[in-house]
Length: 102
Image (tube, rainbow, N blue to C red; front, side, top):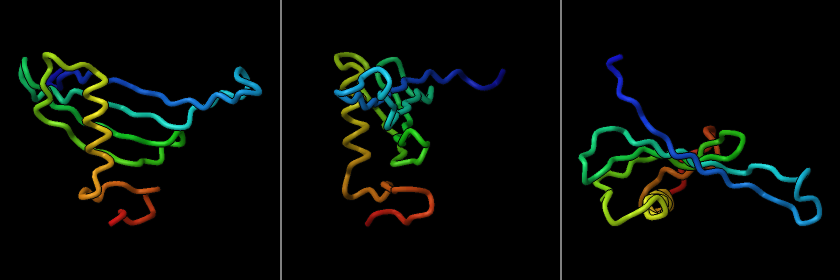
């Protein structure tokens, strides 16, 4: 009861082959975005994880101070992708056994 609810946004990327779009469709990656409930009414703080369909993590991180008014979920996703792809941030890994890219 002491834990606050964390709403989640889940983004799924599917590959849909042209020759067999019904049977051949498969998920190749997912993003999970959680409101960590530490923000205010005007600014939100979010944690994220980007991973392959096999749950091999590509990047994890946190976005703080995201302005809730005037922006939408696409802007939040843009901030997350920008943060995850930042060259100065060594959090991008191919799998848990490999070292971070530097």
